[in-house]
Every structure is written in C-alpha cells, then in structure tokens.
Image (cartoon, rainbow over all chains, first blue to last red; front, side):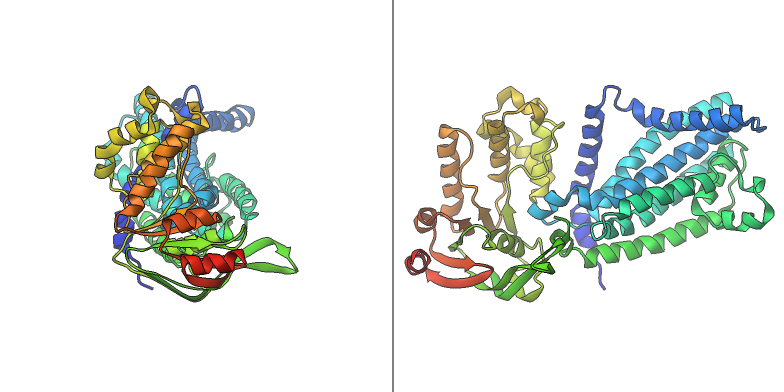
Length: 259
Length: 224
C-alpha cells in the first residue's frame, strides 16, 4: 500500500483553513467564546477538587495544581478522540460534494482541540509557576511531552474516525470507555497511591504516563521519565500510520456509507 | 477524458430495501466523455444521475466495472455553497468554499473582490452568512463556483439561481463557461436544456445506460 504523501501536502491549505473556520465558528456561537477553552477544563478540575479535595479530604498539599494539570491534558485527549471519531460522519454532506482525503477530517478535529488546549495550558503554566512552583530547566521537556500527546490523540482519533461511519453506535461506546478511562488514568490520584498489584497496569496506560510527565515537570521541577514517553510516541506513530493507511483505503468507499 | 465501462455503484444501507442492505444506484453504465464536448445526461428522478456525477468526479469508487479518469485533467463537480459555515463571513466562506473546490489560496485572494461584486453582496460580504437571505447565499455560492475553472466541468442542474435578474446573469455566466472549448458534462431532466446546450447525450434509467449518441436520437428515444 503506497500512501500518496504529496496528496496530503496539497491539501494542507484546506486543513489549515478548515481548522480556522471550525474555531471561528465555535467562538462565534457563544458569548465568551475563547474563555470557554480555559473555563471548561478549569470547572472540571474544580469539581474534582470539591469531591476529592474537600469532601473526601485528600492530603496532598499540591492537590489543586495536580488536578488542573491532569484535567487539562485529559480534556485535550477526550475532546480530540470524541471530535475525531465523529468527524467523518459530521462532514458527510461535504464528502458527497467534493473529493477530500478523508484523513483531513479527524486531523482538523484534533488540531482544533490542540489550539484550545495550547491556549488554556499556557494560562495554566503561568498560574502554576506564579502560585505553586517557579519554572525550572525541566520545562524544556514540556514541548516533547505535548508532542507525544498530540501523536497519541491522532493515533486514537484517526482509526476511530474510520470506524464510526460503519458503526454509528460506536460513539456511545467511545463515551463509555472514555468515562472509565477518566477514572482509572489518574486525573485525581497518582499511580503510587494504588495497590501494588495494579501499579504495573497503570504504568501501561499512555495517558497516565503523559500526566505523570506533565506533573514531574510542572509540579516537581523534575525531568520526566524518557523511556515510557518515547514508547508512547513510537507506539502512537505506528498506530497513526496504520490509521492513515486504513482511511486511505476506505477513501472512496466512505461516501457510500455515511448517508 | 473520462471513460466508464459497465460501471456500477452500490450503497450500503442501514434499513433494508426489498430484503437487502445493499442498493445498486448504478448497475451498468458505459459512456465516454470526449475532450471539448458538452455531454448531456438525461434521466428521470432516481435514475442514478447524481451518483453518476460522483463517480465521474472521483468522489466514489465503482463497485464493479471500470472507471478511467484522465489523471492530468482537473475534473470538478460544481456544487454551490460547499462547506459554508453559518457563523463565518461571506469573505471567509468564499475562501473556504474556493479551497474545497480546488482553487489555490492565492488565486482566491486575488479574486475575492470579483466574487463580492458578481454576487452583488456589497457590505454584506463582511457579515456572517446566517444574516443572508437564501438568495444572497445562492448568489455567493454561485459566484465562488464561477471562479473554479476546471478542465472538465460536471454540472448537476445549477444553471441559474437567485432572483430574475441574477438568473439571467448566472445563466449567461454558465453559458460563457461552457462556450469555450471546455469539456462539460451536464445533468438535467429537462429535454430543452440538453438539446440547447449539448453536443451529445446519454440517457440513464435505473442505473443503466439506455441510449447514447447525438442529442436528437437520444431525445427521440427518451421521449418515446
């Protein structure tokens, strides 16, 4: 199977403008627009703080920044996966009118979520460095962690985008799985708080690896563990490549399904 | 430019029709589009004309038979208002739609003023399109489409839009596009449109080519 990379390159303008149009459209739909990108994950973190920090009285001193870092990265992941999974179905009328490489749709969706995350996360970095711990040299590793998560988001989102048109009910399945993952990935606890026999399983969860890396850098001023990060990036790259090939194969069949 | 040999297209359905969840919109289509000609596709509603256009435009692949499309030619199905987003301005939608129809970004930027003027939108060009009347929307979509100059133009009944005066203007613009030595494939169920504009015609019914050849011959069979 030979992928036509030149074809994807030719459509880069379309991808960029589609991403811009999607964000513009989203901002225009609400009154406070961009502020929601920051507010939505913050409200999620505050909810968890209320439950686990106050009602269940967690003993972590840095619990609020701990939750914020976890929630921001989780919402980027969950938003990208849900958005990408439904992206082809959402654009099915467009797909009937013009030829577009179908991989464009999940990629645009992940890019949109990435802009939102980067906006919110930059604010979070400022807040955490002012209120919790000043930046250290370890911050230099942050772009690498973000890039690894970007690859992971695409690696999960692109194959799901190819699946949902054939099985619409899959959206509900995805929501349920994401709900489960949000509880076990360690947004509100760290891997060393769970019983020893479950720790290995947690260490295999790529989102746990990524959240641990963000927290090592931002909360502890420490360099992240490189081997697991590298494993996440390489595994994601392979899955992403498989997703590209799959969507390329289905390229001219998908318009016949999603009607 | 385009050759179809006994091509068929099958849709997968959620609900079964006559006990099957596959529906062959096209069964057995053979035709040839020659350089520089205007080919008319005739057929009643549900004959498979639009699926045929998608097949020729390279939007769907055939499930049987063969389709050959000249890889060196730009073959475009002209659709109005492709990809319009209601919260974006006329200008932004013109760019979006133009990109989707295969124009280069810098080409669109150069022609934006022309698009605004042709669509007669004036100040509204900078307003979000949810404020537009349906006529304004159609004019904008049409004006963008007129800037797309493909080698092979596939037209699915988009000959005129808007109010009376714009209808004349748009019909004139379309004829201008077709009059050059451009290759055009035109769908219509209106016999007169086909006989006025086309060199040759193909009659499609229930996904099968019933006849093809000179317009008079095919229309005689179609009407018989």
